[in-house]
Image (tube, rainbow over all chains, first blue to last red; front, side, top):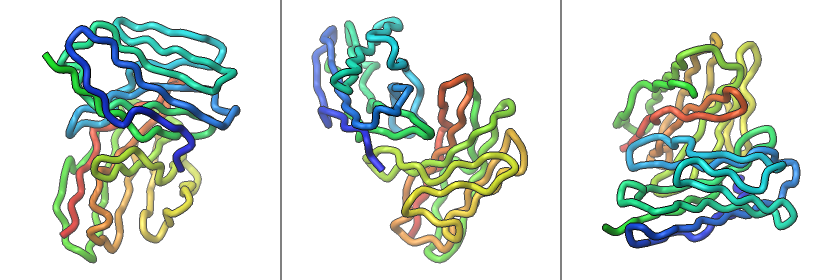
Amino acid sequence: QQQVKQSPQSLIVQKGGIPIINCAYENTAFDYFPWYQQFPGKGPALLIAIRPDVSEKKEGRFTISFNKSAKQFSLHIMDSQPGDSATYFCAARCHDMRFGAGTRLTVKP
Amino acid sequence: SAVISQKPSRDICQRGTSLTIQCQVDSQVTMMFWYRQQPGQSLTLIATANQGSEATYESGFVIDKFPISRPNLTFSTLTVSNMSPEDSSIYLCSVGRGGEQYFGPGTRLTVT
């Protein structure tokens, strides 16, 4: 089912660093690209989302960069904190949502 | 956003039995989805459940194994039938609202 490729699989940064998670897709019919944050034992929580007519969207410390021609999008977390340690999933939707494999982020104090 | 609750939050079941998972949403939604998340893995769509019609199942999932009910616009159930250890997963209910998609807290199922 996976039509969205996500990398890296895991990522470790120091507090204050800027982790970047990348996703790529093939289906040009996708029209909605969200990012979800999941803590252990919890359901995924919608973090930020973008539509393909916009190249960048920022909400607080989280920024999505979107490159329609390259069919890629990425999540940047500014001034990362230990509380940001979680698994992050990118996704893309046409009729239903398809998820990337996930990135386990660890932010060291 | 959407407030979604699931029952039970977790369960341990014996092989060969069935478990019904309930999903309740705070207000009416047209589209509800059921996902499976195996340990340490991503989310896989099981089926889409729209009120008033039969659920639509993804490849690899069948109605006999995962029957779904959608009696109204705020409620749905997923049954995991004739369970085996391979069914041990987190089962997640999800709804679409305002162009966004939201997830419930999940039901952690362990089959022994």
